[in-house]
Image (tube, rainbow, N blue to C red; front, side, top):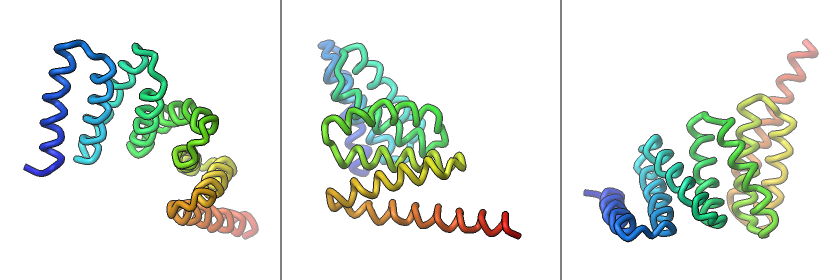
Length: 169
């Protein structure tokens, strides 16, 4: 057994306990953690299921902090799985929260994720805007992810130049 398998087993046991005493907050928290573990195990469908269960419980509890964090993870996972419509809806829902709370790391990553969604749809102007916003925020907090965002901007720039040259030919 590896550490992720052990974590999954432990969280499943804990979840059973929380369900027995009907502790909604801890149930949602544990479902969220099981989503993280499943994602790390590359069981993406299972991770998605856990995140959706956590989301539903956070909504029932009207618990915004837990909900926003789950939506962040769910949005990133859905984007990676090619479910861009759903991903964009969740990411756009939480972006104003991260902006309002001055949570720069999450704000920048959500902007980056939205940029990737726009890039995949060939909405290059929107992608560039999101990448630029993410780059500025990552630089502000001196996060090394700014380099990854700059690579995305370079990729868009090269793509734009190629498209320009094709039109001129």
